[in-house]
Length: 317
Length: 261
Image 1: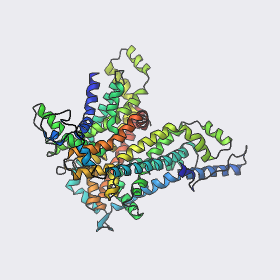
Image 2: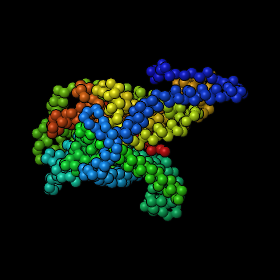
Image 3: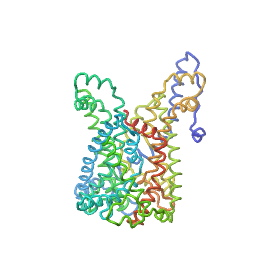
Image 4: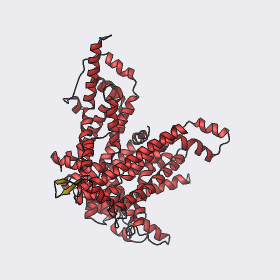
């Protein structure tokens, strides 16, 4: 805090203005408030402009350029995008990203809601069970991925040992593409269910018990109460979670990078890991930027659609 | 109840396994039988890990994370105050612009950010991690939402008593924002302590690595030495878990609050 107090951006408007101020003084007061506001916003605004907005524009420009050598770039027009369209690995990563989203988002939301409903009831040791569910939230993606590597190791991992104890054959977590994808999905679910549960728990706390009492008096069973009261009233939480989960799943990086490096082959390669490897390992910066922009556009379209859809539903329902 | 126990145990299993392997002799891993207790508890795995500059990495993570928290939270609080309590030209436009940066995938920006940081001569230094990480919109959004709840009368009263904008901010608004400050600090701390991709990209000197980057380094160096890898993972997870258990209420509030639209 001290750094801010002594920062040169400090402005101390000379208020208060004496009662009924003449119009000129009022304009001056407005001006002072605007000035103070911009000075207060200043630090954040500078950081966001320099490190978020400018890079976004740069990324768009870069996606129309070729890297030739280490530092020099030449204009390439749409060549990167044309190359993308004909790149089978890129299409594979698009498919994998979609598969990853479809396999994670609905499941983590359904499980999150189910567990929230369960843990919203009174039961012994409830804080302990809740804590166990959201503890993985605070563990880094890298640590999570390393734990995943240990759990899913084909020869000495816990899961294959469990399968062996049950007399089942070992699963090819590292050599088969679909099993590798399953391992990344499972570890993501473990990591993200807690977040979904927390948001749903908060949502559940906002529903007044009288609603349920009234429904019960009218003879609604538990399933009807869930369908007609709980789920609709959790709409805002669901909307928020859907957007957050999809954005997260589109951008999954740590777990894939550490657990599988996109392999075997390109079976678990997602758009982000492909972009990262192109940009930083392959030095194909323009190409990497093009992949990034495609991803950004997909996320934006999705968010906009969700926005429209939820607004329509609100007005219709 | 039975369901709660099953869910709890399933969620705890990976963490339990990490701890178990960290304290087990290597031989335990390579037997085909399931063991839920080390055959001979050992600290060997930790000894192997401490041959690497783990202490330095932990120190680096601490310094970087604390600075990011300090800068980010200060900026967020100031900006949130302006958006919530001041009237000025361009307020809605700037706020929208800020919100629109929230859906940009971080990785899309990485190559340009990398170029910027290099051009500014920060590449390879802690500042290359700290400064870009401190530019966020999410915290501003949270701060604004919280401060909207502070009654205008409180602020007007302070102004009547002759306090300027900044004085009002520091003596009236900030003391009311303690829960907000706690939530913002914890979430920023969590995010930064765990961040991997960006530090991995801009830190090249092994001695400047953060714990997260160091972990991946160990993973590459000690391939399949799960004992050492899990010992280090445990060390990196421990501070966050302790912090979480101490401030669980604020953490959960922070996550829950992020869902309130």
